[in-house]
Length: 428
Ligand code: AMP
Ligand code: GLY
View 1 (cartoon, rainbow, N blue to C red):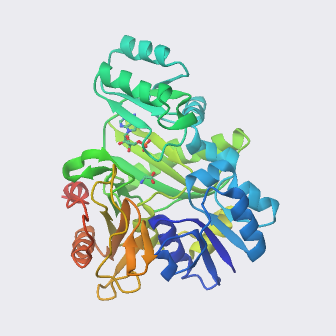
View 2 (view 1 turned 90 degrees about the vertical axis):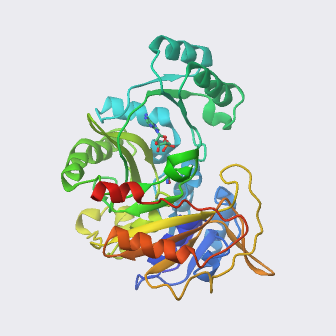
View 3 (view 1 turned 90 degrees about the horizontal axis):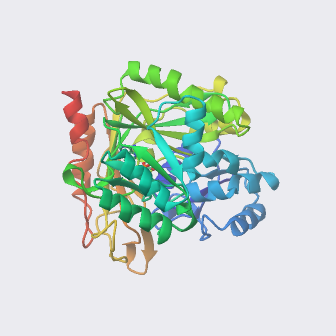
């Protein structure tokens, strides 16, 4: 099969490396891809959000299957457009992608179908939102832009003043554009966070191994929110009992709710959960694989990813095995100095051979923001590389991943040194 993967980060790299293990996988392309992905797939420089360009390219190349991995092309209807030219894809159509693309849609869905989540109210007028927050008088309070905002549209406001400033940024200054036309004001929840990615075919849902993200830029969960500085899988807080409860209270009801609303979900449905004292609650849904969750989840997948993906497209997931190894995985992100705010690009990356560390056993380097330049591989984004190791246990996986990061250098390189520390504590 000739396959197209739409996107160009570490997640797409992890998907491509797993797809290549399938006996059915033939030529594989990535658009736009990046410098490191180019070692594993042919890359074509088309922006993931350029639907017309992507569809024309897909038609020209005659792909048998496409994997749309990134949220914005999904929300814009890339899967619908590819279907129009007869190319089946992995991922939800635009109607189902609303589960991530509109927080108002997802919150109203959860309320209507009694899926546990934080209490909330929706506003399209900042003054009314502020009045509600003042009357409520409970801090922290969470303010979320309705639409996509590169993971930066969620503000945890500690004071009335912070809430006022946050509302101004989102709704008046339009920091995230039209994504801020509406906001969700939400109750602040506490408890360990768990990411559960799942395969879904519209009716059946099969969860993958659980994982834990580390969203803040600095050790000890300090600093700004990022796209994710590292992950571990499985997540020790997510016990088999909790998994059973989430299936019954959250995963199946969500699938049924989407069906009932006329937009059955196919693809990867990501459940961002918080295990609160009152039980598991949904913090957010994503309509795609998480990044960098994918970099620890897919290396543990033993089943044929291409077969499973096709089963989600064809509606045959109930007959398809989704099996994970009993081991553990850890991913440490190497970021550009200054990320997630301002950072320089174009720094030469030392230590890699064809984008990998061939000397490090059970280690894979997933490329997020790299480019090929005259002098070789250089940095080209905030998150640059994800160094993943697998092992029988989490402590071993973390040790191997951190040892491997020592082999890699670029100017200004930043990593957290405590990825997995909380998970290790939970295991004690
Ligand atoms: P999101 O972009 O929706 O994943 O939100 C980013 C982060 O904000 C989440 O991973 C949580 O840590 C935090 N967060 C979001 N909503 C809430 C909430 N209602 N209560 C507490 N923390 C939250
Ligand atoms: N790592 C969080 C996300 O992919 O949304």
